[in-house]
Image (tube, rainbow, N blue to C red; front, top):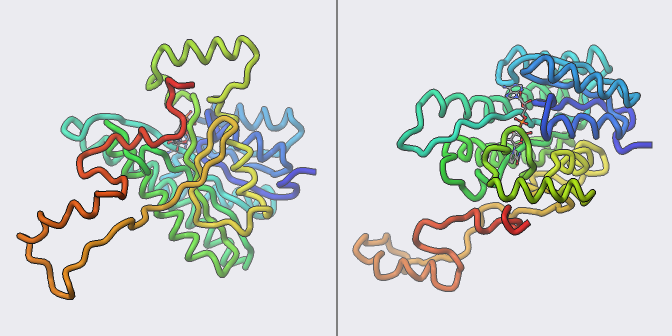
Length: 304
Ligand SMILES: NC(=O)c1ccc[n+]([C@@H]2O[C@H](COP(=O)([O-])OP(=O)(O)OC[C@H]3O[C@@H](n4cnc5c(N)ncnc54)[C@H](O)[C@@H]3O)[C@@H](O)[C@H]2O)c1
């Protein structure tokens, strides 16, 4: 018996990295899986791996930010496996540059894959669930780069923060129909992050793997939480953002107002603001200057 026995799950970007781990775990938990992947060979390989595990899977090759491909994912789930229970939006790319050096094309490419690539498969799934009057679960993939900001990732971070907002709004819109929507913020060593990791950290990780220790940064570590969020066991949880890495599952609080100044029922005079504004910062832990918010991450790569 698995958490997803008899269920049907779509995983986008499932050909490698975190998405591959999610597809394999969902299949292990009993789901039939639609492996949505831009790279056909990578997608076919994961389908073969699932077959070898005794599971059921089918590959759909294409760009998930394309409307026809997104619709085909849901049509394939229904045609091949008789329905759809959960969607995992995972596909993503990076084009890192500081804002001054960032090409508009690299802005568009990243925003397109992440935001449109989350929106279109979600819309197709939600339309199907509404037509069928069935509940459903959607898991979205955000990032600390979006929630905390990360130097050189304005396009990616803006898209990932947008994904967290998109997930919250879907949770509100889907609540009465039993559609849940949650976002994960993963950290793992994959093709996407390999070049960004310091050499010293990579050497330390490889040595730990050789010693047979738990590989905290294995992409497969993300999958158990995602399988749970795809299952009916999580039906009471929606609109939440979970950090996930290694053996750790965290909950993020959304942007929350932590202090207020008021002006006695009158519109502010701009000249009065400089004398009062620091009241918002004193005692709140919020720094008035630009902060390296990534320091708020619970796990710093070089501490591991
Ligand atoms: N690895 C991390 O530490 C980390 C951290 C935060 C967020 N994420 C997010 O997790 C997700 C998976 O990342 P990963 O690290 O496994 O990367 P990865 O590059 O290993 O895998 C991403 C997969 O998505 C596929 N893909 C990309 N664009 C696509 C598209 N338009 N249509 C279909 N498939 C497409 C790629 O071909 C690839 O197989 C991404 O959304 C990424 O932004 C990863």
